[in-house]
Image 1 (cartoon, rainbow, N blue to C red):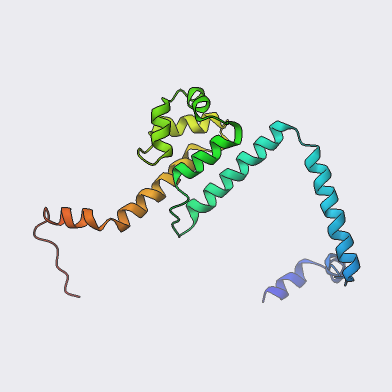
Image 2: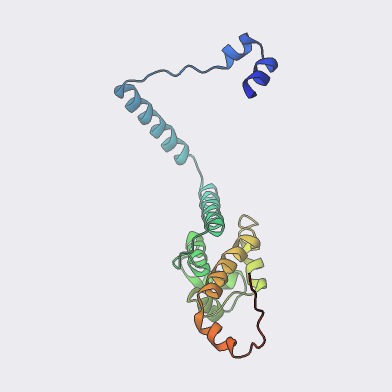
Length: 174
């Protein structure tokens, strides 16, 4: 059915022109092509200035964050603190300087990085603004929510504790 529609849209000549013939390359030609590509990538990378490199690294971190947030699996190593630490390391050697730039007390930043405290909405917005909107606040927030979601699903202690406060539970006979 689809091929009939395709044939009606394009003439046989147009279809023939659009067809790409694959050529078989020898091992030597494949190696030469790989070397040429590597050289071109190296040359392009050498032409980047520091700002462009920083921007590329921040974008890379953003995509890593967003891919992880969209995934169905939870990895305790990929916490909010992990990504924040990676973000800080992109442009700072000392956490103190970063804390000063986003006007966050050092102790609060340290507490966030050591998973003792969750960041406030203000902090998340400051992270967005600090990255010049390259990493949106919603991306940071989704990381935090993924972490909280996992905690809620796996915390058996709170279920036992709160179970004492629930009476007349719904009963279903299916």
